[in-house]
Image 1 (cartoon, rainbow, N blue to C red):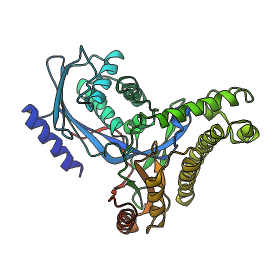
Image 2: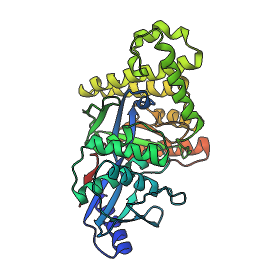
Image 3: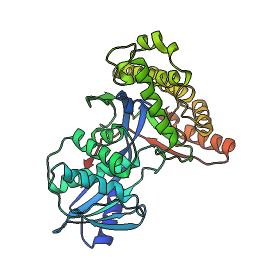
Image 4: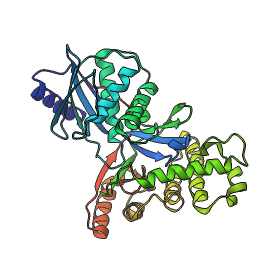
Length: 388
């Protein structure tokens, strides 16, 4: 599959620019296994990089012009590195523009570039096609220009591009795992310190199956902003009684249980989800290092109930999909993944039952909703890498 996609992006580059690319890189999409809405609370997350990715082929130019072609949108945009402005028409290019802008501001001496970008990460599904584009563009420039930059620093460039240039308020998880994922591992990340470790997640006998409800939602919406504000209010209130609380990650389960009844009901529910979700992420390191996939699956199930009932970011389509997935052959668990309000669920499925699982979910979801879901059978893969 990788070679087919390398050929495809090479053909696009050749057709648009009339030459061969100097480098081709890939950067994966990701799935959030655990760590639902904990990232912007300075907490802990456990994503995995997937075998769905964005490929970018590129060659340096002798001027400061960037000529970027999107195969997905069949559109070419051009702009000078000396004047990077937001594009209100070809909005996909803002992920490219933002990364180049902040690379330049970080002190990197860039050159003009021709690039062709092609991705198979479904847009709007919660698998972070945006971070995959950002890391593909950043890593391509690193491969072409040869500047030194650590994985965490490039991830931070991508996050700045998304937050400050595109205007979407996200945590660091997506870019971090797209850049630093590891095959057959999940990535444990402390979103405050950016300390991370790779945790074993063997995806030969157990597959990561992502089921797209086909209900789209944007991250920039009032519900997402409201949840952030509610978490901040919980911090403000709890810090009156608990010392050194800067974010919800600083509140232990024990302290929360002591003071939760002093919180307004909605604030209590939001805080409880985040605090207990952080505990689930910490527990996941222990069970995965022990190879205990049954316990890991239970943590994912618990996450869904909490996201649904306490954080209230589920919806009818997600709950229906989770119910169908849990009853399908080979399923170990199912939960919503990502911001919620639509998008995807994630399940762990025993490899020998994957085909039966996919058939059962497609049929069951179509019967219940009238919509045929997209289903992706995935493995945990490496982060951004040079493929040619």
